[in-house]
Image 1 (cartoon, helix red, strand yellow):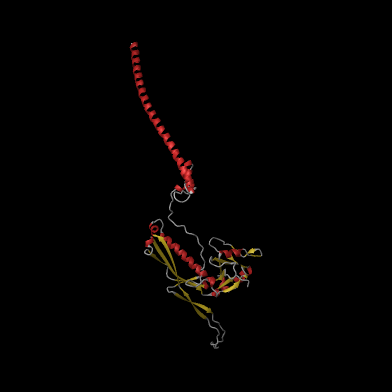
Image 2: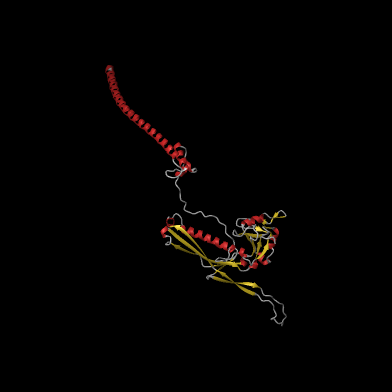
Length: 376
């Protein structure tokens, strides 16, 4: 019984050994096949690496020999970027030559406006709406005199009657034109109508404000700083402002005109005033808060960037007084916009015109006084 069991075990082991030998033979053949394939891939890979190295050498040679301008040229930035990529360094967006050139641009769908200064005449003057092309504005030339009389005394002897004048203010036309490509208008990336309207209105407002300050009256408003009817007070020096001159300026008006009086001038002129000292104390005070004007001798200083400078003889850098009483602005109908898509059609352009009717001039010069750069 034991011998039969032993023989069966031996027979079973013999069968397993035969099976193992057959499996080994099969695996051996597979190994040989796989090794042959691996060797073939390794050879191809070695050939590819050698070819790649040859291509890199040829690329470096071509880049180094390429001219900086003309036919076949490569810019220095592009050369640096190619060499950077070949060396396998980390590419960054911040440095164009290290990868920034391959970063796609993103179009931001708004236009960032430039900040610009504006004169402060309209904000303080009186604006009168009109519909015609000339505005007649009545104003007081002189007030009537009064006399004390008895109960039955003759009134015909009263001397001096008041006089009313009539100022003729032309309503001038200001026109602005802008051209823009039809492709950009149709791109829908920017609300061009809104942007153009705001941009041109802003530009026209600045031009109008400049005319209110320094306009010569020819097809435009007459400017405050150019009005020869305003009393002029010397600065006290041939080419500079002085403390005494500024004191004379603010003390040359009546109490009523000075009560709501403001000083008008440029920022550079304020800088010259800030350098002046009265017993080591400044005669100006900076703004007490955002949106509040600085003061000079206790009066608000309104910025007018168009005003003349304060270091040139004969200039009028400062005007002081009640601008609401003195200067009248006549404003025509609202601004109009006209779009012309025909004139520039051959160039793919659309022209947009804006038009505004406005006039302005000093009507009551006695409400203002000007500082002239002069010794006396």
